[in-house]
Every structure is written in C-alpha cells, then in structure tokens.
Image 1 (cartoon, one colour):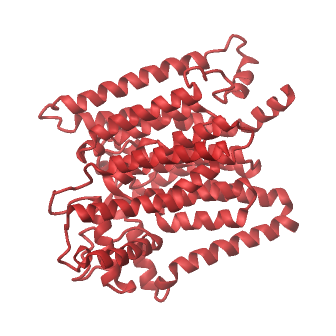
Image 2 (image 1 turned 90 degrees about the vertical axis):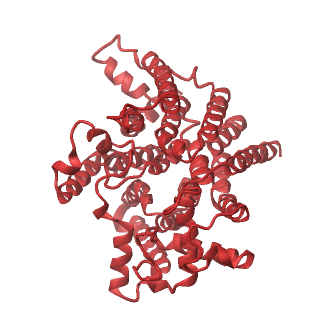
Image 3 (image 1 turned 180 degrees about the vertical axis):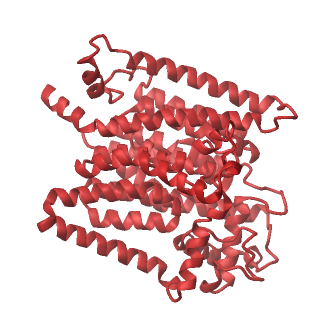
Length: 507
C-alpha cells in the first residue's frame, strides 16, 4: 500500500511539472506565416476533420502540403481526427477549413495542452509506473526513485509541453511493448510496438532490437517446433496490426505510395537545422551536402547506420536476454540518430526513453546521457522561449537523480556494467583500473562544459561572420558525447552475458 501511495506522489509531481511548463511559450507562438509545431498539430486536426481520408496526404487547394502537410503515419492522423471532434464541440472556429490557419487564443492553448496531458495519462505515465513497479530484484525505494526520475526527465516534458508535440504517445506504446516482453507476453508486445511504429515512423529506431530479440527467442525454442509456431504468431500479429492501421489507405496503390513519400521525405536532404548528429557535425569540416549527390548521401547514411547497429543486433539475436534487449534498444536508437537520413533535434527522445529504462541499473551513465540529450536541444528550446523551463527542470532532474541513486558514488566497475570488460583487459594489463576515475572526471568536465556553453548561448552575441557559432558548438559537443555513449552502450550490450555469468559465479 505504501508503495502505491509513493508512486501516486511521484506521478503527481510529474504531472505538476508538466502542467507548469505548459503555461509557458510554445513553438512558433505569434510568428507568422508558418508559426511552428503547435500550428502543425492544430492544422492536422483541421485537415483530418474537413477532408476525406483519401485526401489527407495529397496536395490540393484544400490541403497545401507546403503548409505543415501531414507527414506522420496513420495512427497520428487518427489521433488528430479524434482531437478535432472534441475541438469541434468546444469551438468550431478552431478547426474551420482555411480560416483557422494560425489560430491562437488562450482557450485554444488550454485545449491543446490538455490533449497532451490526456495522452500522457492514458498511455505514457501508466506504462512508466507499471514498468518501475515490475522491476525485478529491486527494492521499493529503487522502484519509486526510477519512476520519479523517468517522469521528471526534462527533454520529453520540454518538447511535449513546451515546444508542443505528442511524443509521449509513441514512446508510451514502446514502453508497453518492453513491459509485455519482460513478462513473455510477446504477442501483446508486438501489438504495442506496431502501434508505436504506426504513430511515428521514427519508432523504426526501436524496431530492429525488438525484431532481433523475438527472432532470437524463436531460434532458442527451435524453428522446427515451438519457435516456428511463435514466429508465425508474431508474423500474423504484425501483419494484422499494420493492416488495421493502414486499411483506409490500402484501396489504391497510389494512396500507399503517397503516404510513404510523405513519411520518408528523402528529397529534404541529409539533415536540417543544427542537429547533434554525425552528419551535421561533420559538415563543419566537410560540406557533405554539397560535395556528394543526394543518392550517395542516402547510401552512405544507410551503410553507416547498418554497420553501427550490426554488432549488438547479432549479439541479441544469438543470445536474447531482456537486459541485452534494453542495452541494444538504447544503442541501436542512438546509431539511427547519429547516422540515419533526415534526423531532427527532437529525435534524441527516441534514444532517451530507452536510456531512462536503465537508470536503476547504470544511474550515473544514464543521468549523464539524459543531461546531454536535453542539452543537445538547447538551440530549439531557446528559439521557443523555454530557457527558464529548461534551467529549472534540468536542475530538478539532476538533483532527484543524485539524491535517489547517489550517482556520484556509483562509479565502480560493477556500477558502470564494465566489470566483465575490465576483467578481460586485466588479463593482459594487470594494473588496468582506470574506468571509475576517468568516468567520474569526464562527467564533471562534461557538466561544466554544458553549463559554459549554455551561458554563452544566452548572454553572448555570435560574430557576424559566424551567426550559427553557438548552436553548432552545442551540436558538435553533444555529438561527441553521443559517439562516446554509442561505444559504451555497444560494449555493455556485447559483454552483457559475460557479466551475468561472472555475477552468478561470484554469488
């Protein structure tokens, strides 16, 4: 009973922070002619309510795709339609065709913020609480602490309740999938991941580890017996789930191809804005967007992404385990963010939520990564007028993590999940014991550097010849961090089973 009372308090704290952030500014507020993501979500409600389904993804006089045309999967469109029906009951002018473009008012802002909160309450927050309650071999304190830290992660709060999006829906579905897999409810887990993928195409980041984990389980059961039956059930589940989501668009081949063109806009180039991935950082030294033709950029992006996800994916397929699945989930998502084609700043959230799931296992490294992920979106958050919200939520998050998990003390090889690797290295270099000290010093230097860059972005004007100097500095520093974390997540994913064996021998 006490556990549930404390979980309720953690959830209420998370909700309070969310609603407080929602009182502030949002993307594109009073900035015509395009406004921002707030207007994009409102416009999708307008389009889905007033136009027939077959016109949602097509350019027309009533649906100008250059003005926030729908470019998310069908489940997002259905969600927009549902919100539009509610908006119609409150005030039809909010979604009136053409005349509602750029609509802004306090009642409408309250409605839009409430739709995010309701989605959070229905999908994301229950998944977080149940996941933390079901953590195996964890004390009640650790379960409560995990839930509180995840619910206070500032990146998701600032983007959904500040900038304005519904990332908690797709991420919530993905969390439900992880929760189901942890209890061998593979069919339900497949449905949850299919819903996540049909809500936001970027959930492809999570699909590969999911596929490898279940394929590995099928191999383990034997593909001539129970494994084959499980594989057939999973295949049938995925096909049916996608068919139900895509049914209205399956009437014509032209419909399907147009939706895919909207979901994967390869003509928009390798990257946009100042995103903290490999390609944007590389462009500081080598103008890859002008040096290589678009086709070559696409192939190079695919090749690097594929090669970077290969090691942990092979390991997960050959030796499927839930812990290895979570490590691979973080590593593969980070590979996609760093190397894949047309990535946005906000896509780092698709890496951050899997890392949130590891906060009770590797508290220091998880906290460090989550701080960097939040910092990587600083230029976007400053553009939206969310500086105060950024500072307060970040300080609150790091304080709660430090108090709950004593992260500054969790620097041993065991705490870092590097014991197996260190033991292997010491066979050849007996004096090798540098991981704890190096990680601790690096963390402190990193936090100081992020603080200095934040201060520079806020207080200094860049040189006239280099107007993007500070945003690029944030992106480059964040990218270097992410490359380090990619190596780290792959190491602990590949060495995971050896660490488990060592622990069993010790006990």
